[in-house]
Length: 101
Image (cartoon, rainbow, N blue to C red; front, side, top):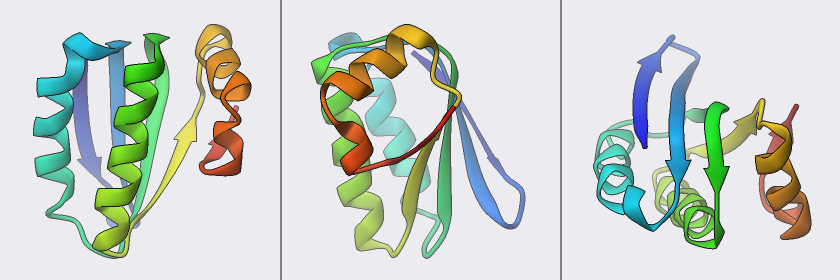
């Protein structure tokens, strides 16, 4: 997994690319380290470059949500590909995350 972080002054945009799975754990922890510098912000995960997510990847998103909420930030997931959206749908992630297609 690769990521890019961009702060536009209103929200923090995180572009995710590749696969969000167990192999992405270290990179995702590095991302969380960067995001913890932003307090009381909207964090938008751009998921159009994400080709795959599994249960571990989904767990990483839940960890991000909890960690960022401690700093007053909220998360939204935008533009997931069909297969990623199906995983989010099957696991009822829409009950926890704001998801925009």
